[in-house]
Amino acid sequence: MTKDVIRAFIAIDLPSDVLDSLGQVINKLKEQHPGTSVRWVDHEQIHLTLKFLGDVSSQNLEIIKKIVATEAAKRQIMEMGIGGIGAFPKLHHPRVIWIGVEAPSELDDLRRGIEDSAARLGYPRDRYDFTPHLTLGRVSRKASVQDVRRIGKTLHGFSVGYLGAARVEGVHVYRSDLSPSGAVYTRLFTAPLIEQNGQVVV
Image 1 (cartoon, rainbow, N blue to C red):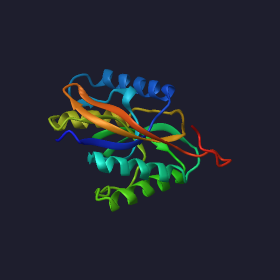
Image 2 (image 1 turned 120 degrees about the vertical axis):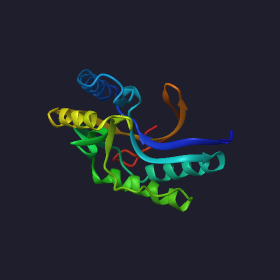
Image 3 (image 1 turned 90 degrees about the horizontal axis):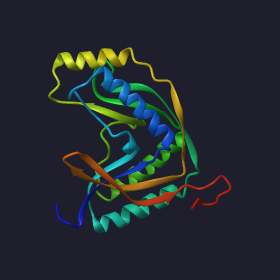
Image 4 (image 1 turned 45 degrees about the vertical axis):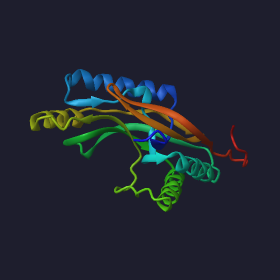
C-alpha cells in the first residue's frame, strides 16, 4: 500500500462507562472460553461502524470528510441503547459475537446518506442490511466444529441486560493500521451533529 493510501472507516464512538461494561462482558465470556477459539476485541476500541471504506487515497479522504460533515449537519443529536447479546450468522453457530444497539431510525438515515455518497465515489455498497451492533469477538476459522458448538451453547445461556445509553454527538473518520497485536485506530476527523435548536455542537 502506498503512503498516500490508508485503510479507513466511519464510526460512532461510545462513552467510557459503556466501554467498561462491554469489557466486563468480554471477561466473563473469556472465563468460559479460554484459549484461542475466539479473537476478542480490545473493549476500549469498540465502536459502532457505519461504513468500512477499505483503501482510501489522500484525495478521496478529503472528499469523505466533506461527505461525513454534510450528512452529520442534517441530523440532530440522538441516543442509542446498548444491550443484549447475539451472533452472526446465528447464536447456535457463531462466527461474530456482538452486543445489540437499539437506535432511532435517524441513525439508519445517517448511515444511508453516507453509504449513498460513498457509492457515488466508487466504494462498494455493503452486502448486508444494516444491523447496528458492537463486535465483541470473532470465532477463529481454525476453531473446531466442537468448539463452535460449545461457544454457541454458552451464548445461548448467557444473558446480557441493558448496559447503558450512548449519546451520539458526532461521526468520526478513522484510520486503521494493522499490527501484530491487532488493529490500531486513529481518529482523523469528527463531524458534529446538531442540537435540537439547530446549533452545531463543537
